[in-house]
Image (tube, rainbow, N blue to C red; front, side, top):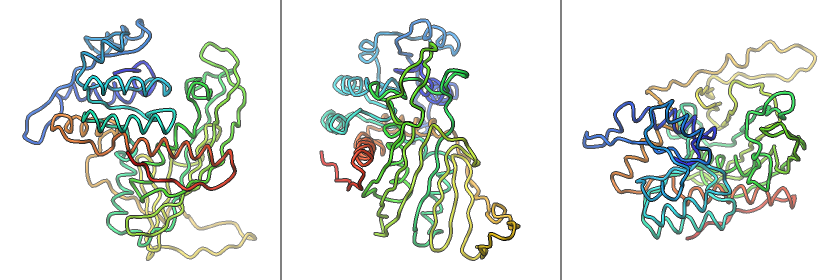
Length: 376
């Protein structure tokens, strides 16, 4: 597990996924047998690794990435983006299965090379698509599959929160996120997520129109040193989508680390259709059917008396929905043991890198850009 001392590698993948899988006795396979996991913690800081290993009763840790890759069955990477392509390439060339965070590379060319290497080596590769496993989006996808929306018209997404600059209060995110030279930027970070969310909920993303911004130009790093924020901290995107049935959908997603939250969850998606609408966060989902839609009347001269939020109904889970990261890990491990491809692989990841790259290009050139098909 490379990069396990970082926020995502530690919190979501070690503490909330691999350790619970280990402690529950492994993953149950289709034939009723179980496969157990034994993590090896890898990073650059020996003291942190030693501390984490002791805290969580993990026997193995090392700062030697190359040696860890040679000894592993599966290589997981959550280190810095600008180091990822080299790590994943080395692992696949060694014949190791790979599970990785996103983006998989800094450029589309690198991401496509990784997808080609996966095809050449035949190893099982999974790329984290965690949001599609989370309760809110599972419910939203179920509404799509059941035809609840009728013809889908649009999606509106809002993501983000205020990330402190680091002077008066420590920042909640690492400083490299705000330096373009270190692979930072919210477009690079989040558009790869929005690509698989849009694909997984609605359909194929055909075009992108984006406007990026660096709203906070100066920040302070983990040592309290002032630095120039060279990466974008906000991205405003419009996407044309075609559903499997051939309908055209317009999606808008705002992403910002310089916005204060006035919504129920840190990310929310509203889908509107001819027969109904739904609003989903990471956990909750509420819907309003055509038959239950009120008829608001615009009158700015009178105060609003309608309880608009109360007019929506909660969508039940109807199942036990575990942590999204853990659920995908379990699916990936089953795929590895069965020797079959994982459904979210490096080609899917390359499309995410492509959307981010074209989003940045769209902003720089001030125009809408068509998204070409990626071929290996």
